[in-house]
Amino acid sequence: MKTSMTALSVNVNKVALLRNTRHLGIPSVTRAAQICLQAGAQGITVHPRPDGRHIRAQDVHELAALMKQWPDREFNIEGNPTQNLLDFIRAIRPDQATFVPDSEDQFTSDRGWVFPQDGQRLRPLIQECHELGVRVSLFMDPEPGQMAQARAAGADRVELYTEPYAAAWGTPGQEAQLSCYAAAARAALNAGLGLNAGHDLNRANLTEFLRRVPGVAEVSIGHALIADALELGYEATVKDYLRCIAQARP
Image: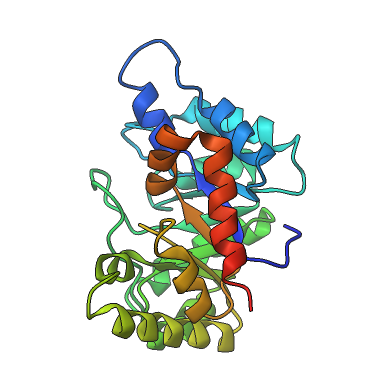
């Protein structure tokens, strides 16, 4: 992905969730992704859960075909590698696989991997992705002491789980959260990891996060962005998130 700024990857799961409430095929997940890419998004993210409650297998393959028309953009598939994720990785070989430690019936992602407990089972799965030419990012809590261990397990990047920061936004706890994430980011960078971030980032809290947390290569944003798009449209929403990212630059 060729960008000097933090890249925006749009998670289109919530488009699929709305589509799945009827049998009409609308709204179109691939059309949403196409408009977001045309508006300047640098990537598309999907999280196909085993129960298919939003993104379905057909969506993943249709999006993979779409992304071939955008070779300078990134396709990121996330999920638990001990469930259905590796089947998609083997078939599609996306640019990035984000490993998330969700249970099969989990409502939403709410924690990161823990080392050394998770290291042994993750290493061979990371290695398989590398053999397929796929970069691996691990979904992690903002704990500096975990970053070197994530790197030792073979991870190329970590995605910092940002819900605690978003929950503290506008409260007295905001500053402490930003300090925590900045420390985790520095530890990740010092360990040789690339740095992603995501979960509950939005137009209000994104700029300050990127100003204070060094080296964020990519943010993955879904729920807030799609909610904004219901009011503003995909194109205007993506452009406004890109504006928030640009405002964080020195």
